[in-house]
Length: 55
Image 1 (cartoon, rainbow, N blue to C red):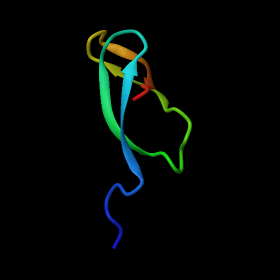
Image 2: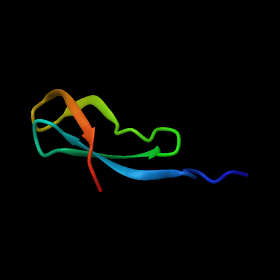
Image 3: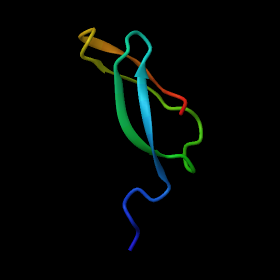
Image 4: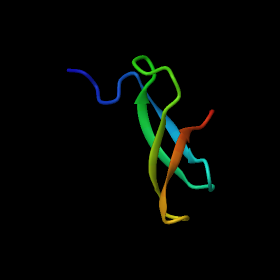
């Protein structure tokens, strides 16, 4: 049986407009490019772009 999260690493998504962060996992073998998505920022109370932060 495969283990959960094999090949996946912990990443941080940081807001481009405030200091808020989300924590998630992604498989860096399948998706080597940096992740960028729109998510809700509770500090600004609206959706903003979040980018994967360098470790």
